[in-house]
Length: 231
Image (cartoon, rainbow, N blue to C red):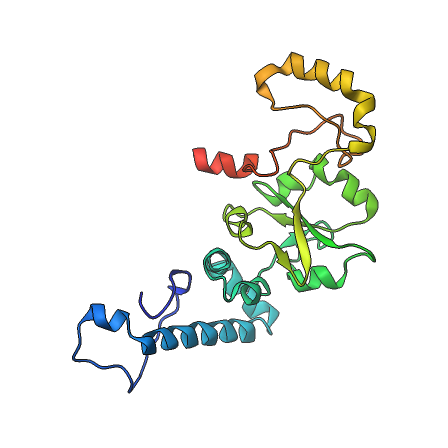
């Protein structure tokens, strides 16, 4: 516990050091600067080991299947190594078919002029693929990352960007300001009908053919994560 962070708890090994005094209490040892240096080096070596495994696709697929949740927990907890851990993440996307890709791969094939990484959260790939949230982005040819692991939203609270590209959750609220005024009366009537069942009714450019979508507020939890919390 003192030598390795919780998210790397699956890593086992022996630390051999001539610098740690053995004739002092555990409390004093916890405050020892040498211990902090050892911890930092262990984390560094672990990440380097993961990067080596990632060089072999088949080996990394097995590793990722077993320990992806640990990496995502590290994204939330380890600010110093957050970007390095982000490079180790793999996701399905709207253009990757049955293959999981890295965020680096996503950025490399972003459309010209695209400045943000779009992602959607949900219970499973099967649930998010037909989502109306994706209609407008698909029409524009943008790729969308599928985040369907319950821990994804937890880790994304801390991972705000990657390689200079900001993350944008397509489940969150977005307002269509240019045409909003023209439909004020309609949205007011719909809000009166729905009452307290919704916070507000507004226009959105995110859909292309569906009549409406239910959104969570930009600062609130998605319906997916709220469902897991209640469960």
